[in-house]
Amino acid sequence: MKQFFLKGVIASFALAISAGANAGLIGVWGNSTPFATPIQNAGHTFVNVNSATTLEELDTLEQVWLIRRDGDADLNNYVLNGGTLVTEWSGASWAVNSMSMLEADDSFGFASRTSVTFTQEGIDLGFTTNLPNPYSNEGATEFFRSFTGIGEGVDIIATANGYNVGIAGSYGLGNVVALGWDWVDTNALNPMNQLLVNDITGLSFSPKGVPEPGTLVIFALSLIGLASRKFKR
Image 1: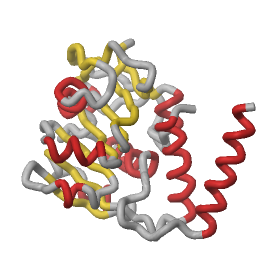
Image 2: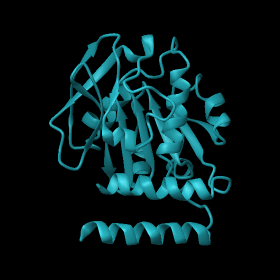
Image 3: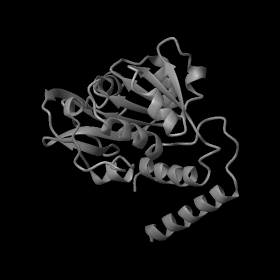
């Protein structure tokens, strides 16, 4: 199991037994209109961020979603410092090509109202919770970025029409999930809201500044450590 997913498993387990204490701040950079309600319904706090947001402010966020915008140096440093970045469509180009956050290339785009299939790695990250696999969403599964030249440390988490349209991996101390399709289209149906919830719960890493984990969390981590050592034998 790669480090990215091991961190995800640990964080999801910890979140499950201390959800109330670790409700996170979710920043949305770009088209924020569809996000506030599903984020709040998932028990988290919606924060609208942009190029005027400082690194200190970004560092308080559990995740930042980059929606049809380019980020900036502060957003890049937020991930390097341990933040989690999730992209949509053209935001993936900035993360992968402009900033080289993942060892891959955003080689080309294509348009086709088609289905997205999550790989086992995507399933492990929780993207298929309460969603069919493959899933389609009319205009919100229509425009895609295709990733090639994918390095060993990067996982393919979603495909469409035989192309790699979703990848994930570590960058600095943080993580990047490049979802290269228009999953936040303004004409999207309900599956978009479910994907938003899955983004939060499957990719939840402990926010900066929260108290030390309680006894149950420490016990859970010790169990995972024992299982990991047993697996390596």
